[in-house]
Image (tube, one colour):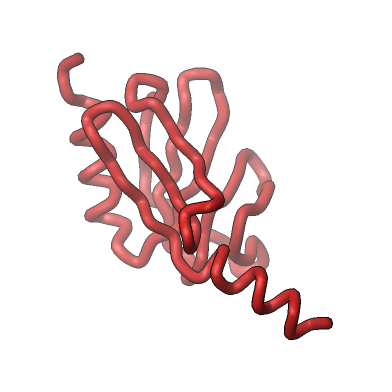
Length: 108
């Protein structure tokens, strides 16, 4: 039974792809079946954060918001205008932060 569960979960969560366009930020796990999308004008701010070890990996409800992560402890936290907070795990937080800030600060 554990092998079957692993065979299902691994393709779904083996990677996290973040795509940033002039309209939106899209997160896609593994094969792309599990996705999350943020409209750029809904993002109020973005900062680099460090996740606690016990936050784990995958999609998690954490103190103060939601975490989308596949490995490591570095993340970029985005604060939406509606007060919701999301953390996007990454091994290149500075690059992700720069890309997000560029996209959300573009004139509409």
